[in-house]
Image (tube, rainbow, N blue to C red; front, side, top):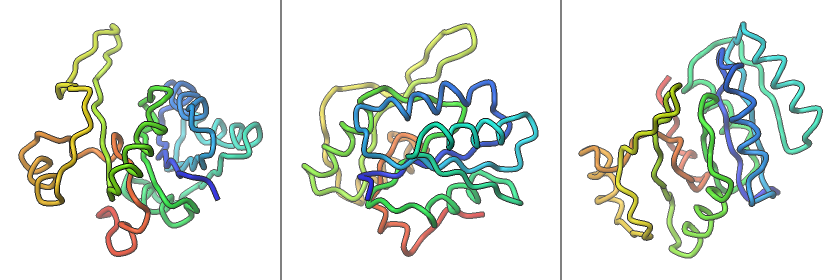
Length: 175
């Protein structure tokens, strides 16, 4: 069983998909399952997903007959075999050590979820950080983490988080 499953909803993002998938494939943590969930793409993304599955045995591809990021995330959760789940949007990319560092933090702190910072990168290569990077590991109670998300001190995006898969036994993304 892979250590973590990374679910990537794909919908008409062929121009970004290569950079996204390569950033996940090239993680320092190699024991990963990558689930590409095609959301009715019409721009060649669907074919790119199938090509990736042929060159990397860690990649699974789902082709959905309905579209939506929540639908795709839930479909990926349903077939994920790992104890831990991360999400990346197909127009994003991640740093090479991101999932190793997040898994280490999750295990060391016996947490149910960990998160990291992210930045926006624009087409002109300008980057903008939404949250300050302290470089520290900070442990929050469930209540403090929820408060941080609701007060926009912690991003509500699932794409900068690593979760215990069992959290999704009782709740899924709203479709």
